[in-house]
Length: 77
Image (tube, rainbow, N blue to C red; front, top):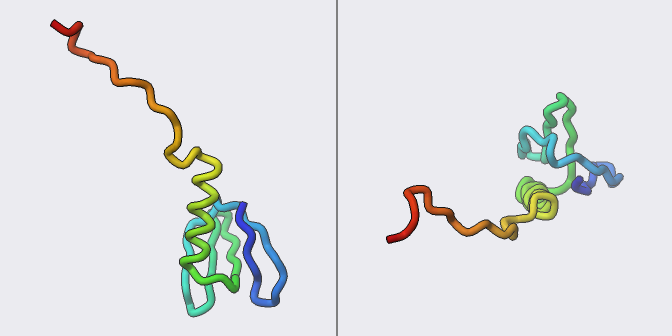
């Protein structure tokens, strides 16, 4: 979830996973996969930064440990 500001100054929290498009027309318009649209005060780049930060927090941001590679062509000789 990301917190944004409507043009009238009220806060709105949007599920970042539902964002389909973000447009500058010149106001920032966020379209969700549900068909709803929201006009917000924040510029497009800031909305993108918040969405990326959300994904980083919720998806581990690439900090997950990887298992060591396993050979598939048989044992070493």
